[in-house]
Amino acid sequence: MRKKIVAGNWKMNLDYNEGVSLFSEIVNMVKDERQGDQLAIICAPFIHLNSLSKLGGSDVAIGAQNIHDKENGAYTGEISAKMVKSIGAEYVILGHSERRQYQAESDELLAAKTKIALSNNLKPIFCIGETLDERNNGSYYEILKKQLVNGIFSLTEEDFRKVVIAYEPVWAIGTGLTASPEQAQDIHAFIRSEIEANYGFNVADDTTILYGGSCNPGNAASLFAQKDIDGGLIGGASLKSRDFTDIIKALNS
Ligand code: 13P
Image (cartoon, rainbow, N blue to C red):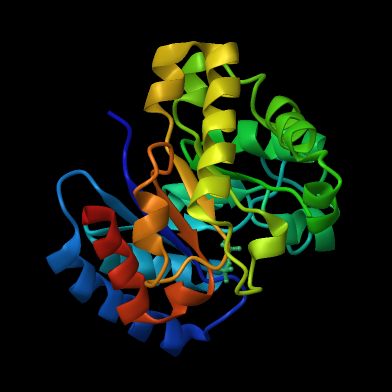
């Protein structure tokens, strides 16, 4: 059975005290809402990871938002997978469209980052998504397939099983424009069929595929009700403890 996950991506928000305070609220609220093997994750800026991993306990897992693609060395200002793992983080977001766009991260670089994450026992939350132009000109299936093939489809089955996929249409991120449940389901089913073609039915059936892009307490339940949507990757709404917890509640409805 695949895991249901709600992951928050705080992006570049919250100073140290603000982060600790929001996270403490989230842990207290999530304790009461999380059911069975549902998982809540907060992916925070590096400065927060150490403190949050001590506060999170078994209720909220911790993830980073990036790692370097090399094991260690003369890369001033960078953070390695091993460093992130050593403070108790379990996940790392890779392939987010903001890094593809602003840091020019290529599929090839992301494939290297994915491998180094896995070899350090960090589980990638691997994001793919099309721009508005790609949606409008109809090339989006091809674009999404290319991101999957070049980014993660060369992994062994054992490694691939540790990856969470997030479909985040770029046109829906931070815009208030959510993909409709039908649009999102259509893409999630496509992603699952591509996984099946590569790794077989069982792996595809076990892979958690999250939706991200203006997901909020008002639309989460209808998105999560779709059969191939296994939870969400939440930006803005993860900065409010009530909204984030209500999105977790929507997993149960
Ligand atoms: P928003 O929820 O703010 O649209 O951001 C989505 C996202 O990019 C999560 O990674």
